[in-house]
Every structure is written in structure tokens, then in C-alpha cells.
Figure 1 (cartoon, rainbow, N blue to C red):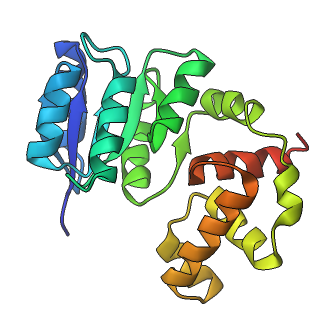
Figure 2: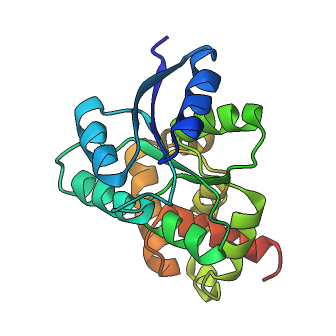
Length: 214
């Protein structure tokens, strides 16, 4: 089985070393490299094309948000395949987590996370799931839009949205609903347009908020 290649990005050498020690003893995970600042992170992301980028938000020079924006732009321009980004940060401000998700992060965790939970999160994000610390998820849900667009969804689109909210990829949704990936992609596009959101993460958060009654 091909190992999950992880790029560690943190400005503290002790933190990077600790993460490397933790990850190198895990089955199926390989540390592809380390970066101590945003510019180095972008360079290594392009050179190493890691599967998962473990990214701190507080970096010297170019911070994590700027790194996310650059990675997203490069992926959109087809310049490089973007690894899934899992933010691991001590910045607990709700706005910081919200911005990270809108900028393309596939997950947000705080640095007090249990080591085993961090390893599970890396595997989950690599598999295409959205993963948020409970505190981050709660703050993002309350910032979602009013949910009025949900009424405009067809039955099938609601089913697709429910699968998106579970963090499932297009392939997994196609398998669950017994349709083609191309059909799922079309439904996802329709769901995003009708809900007035930019990406799957925002759609998932809106669905969760609706289930919780606002």
C-alpha cells in the first residue's frame, strides 16, 4: 500500500521534530519533508507533491492563510496537484478557523489534540473527508448562511447534500447512491449553486446547522 506522504509546516523546530517522531512510527504514513515558514512550505509542496500538508497558521513572513490561498490558486491554475491541507494550530479564534476552511483547508485541529486523534485525522483527510475540531465546527456553523436555499433542492440533491455533510467524496457518494461519479459531480454543482455557497465545506456546514435547527 502506498504510504500517505505528509509535509510538516511549523515554525517551531521542537514541534516539527515531535510531529516527525509521532508520524514516522505509524503504519502507512511517511514524512515527506518539513518547512519552517510559508515560502518554504510552498516550495516543498511544489517539489514533493505531498498527499497531506500539516499546516500551522502562525508562520513568519507568509502566514498559513496566505499559504492556503497560494496553494488553492496553483491548484486552480493546474500548476500542481494540491495535497489535502490539515491545519494544526494554536490560533483558536473562530474567524481564523473560518478563513482557513474558506481558503481550502480540508480540516482544522488545535495543537492540544490527542496524538492518536491527529493520526486518525491525517488518514481521514487523506481519504477525502472534512474534519473540524468541535470548537471550529461550532463557530463555522453559526457563521453559515440562513439556509433558505435548502427548500429549492430536489430529493436527489438533498440526498447528495446529506452525503457531503458526512464528509464523503464524490466516489463514495456515487457508490452509496448507485449513480455515476459524473452524475454526482453535476448534483454537487447544483447544490452549491442553489445554496449560494462556494464549496462543499460550506454546504456541509449549512446542512449540519439545518439539522441542529439553526
